[in-house]
Structures are given as C-alpha cells and as structure tokens.
Image (cartoon, rainbow, N blue to C red; front, side):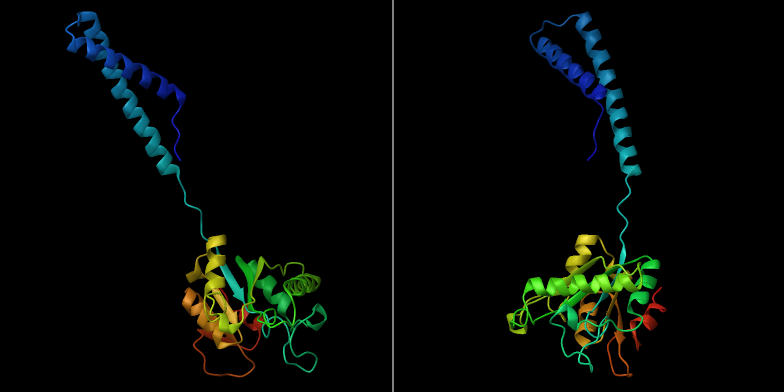
Length: 242
C-alpha cells in the first residue's frame, strides 16, 4: 500500500474547496478579479501537487521488491530417513521403532548448507487404520528431529507434514497426489521448479512430478523409475543437489 504525506493532502483539500466556492460564485455571477486571482493560483498549486504526488507513487513502485522465493527439498520418511521392513523393525508405530539410516543427518545438513529448506512429506495411513493416533505420530516425528540433531546439529527439519487418510478416502494430500508439497510451497513461498522431491517409492516421484519439482529416487538397486536421478542413499543424493 502507498501512503501520501499529510502535507500533500491538506493543501489539496484547501485548493479543492476554494475552487468549488469560486466556481459556485462564477455560476451565480458574483465573480471578481480577486476571486479569479485565487482561482488561478489554486489551479496552479493543485497541478504542482498532482505532479509531486505522482512522483512519490512512482518512486514507491520503483523501490518495491517482491519477496524472493525460496527453494526446498521434500523428503519422504520411511525408507529415505529411517529403516522400514528391516531386521530390526517392520513399520514405525512408536518412537522406539525409529532407526535412522546411515548418513541421513549429515545429508540433511549438507542440503541445508546449499540454501534449501527441508520438509518431510509422508503418508501415514496407520493413523486412520488404528495402529496409532495423531499424538503418537507427532511423538515419532519429535523423536526423529531430536535424533537427527543429536547426530548433526545442523540437520534441522523446517516442518513435517503427514497425510493420515486411508487410501480409500481419495484425498488430495496422499502421495502420489501433490497436495502436501503445494500447501508447503504456498506457506513458505517456495519455487517448486527449483526444488526436489526425494523418495523411495514411485508414488513419491509422481507427487514431485505433479508439483513441478525435480525428482530423485532412492534405491539400493537400479530400477525403472520416472525420477530425474537415482541414488542408493540420501547422503549420496545430497552430493548431487545443486
């Protein structure tokens, strides 16, 4: 919003009032040379004020700089950050079920050093299926963030977003839909074309493609994928994010 100084508004008002009064006198034929003199002066002052006002508006427009958009890396959780279906754990339903994959914290810290915000976007239908509630899920994520910073103090997550809907609910947030990414992009003014979606499932990759991000698939084996790149670990992928 552009504001004009009160010093402009006051003379403007006075000149307008004088002009109105003199025009009324002119209509009523009560006009004399003194009134004509004041009318000319007021018209001149008013024109100068208009020019000055326009210069202020144009300066404000010229000085305006739109907020710079940021870039982000969206991370799937299970299979990218922590173990799942391993010898130690099947699914992560409690904080005690969470085991970080090697190099995860260092990878996040490295990506942050390159100027990216870090978000976790995860499907957690276990809530709707009754394996855990929202409080328990939040506790898992708090524990995850704590464990990451324990390994590397710079492994900071900006926000964790989870879709807890059942697959049958047909929501727009559950991957492969892009709802979680788009919501975060709007909230944090993120340029999606300059961002990455990283996941170990093709549904993660499809969500990134729908959102318009670059995509990285994490897999121990080379498999067919729609992703732009494929690496065996998040740590390896972090070296190729520019």
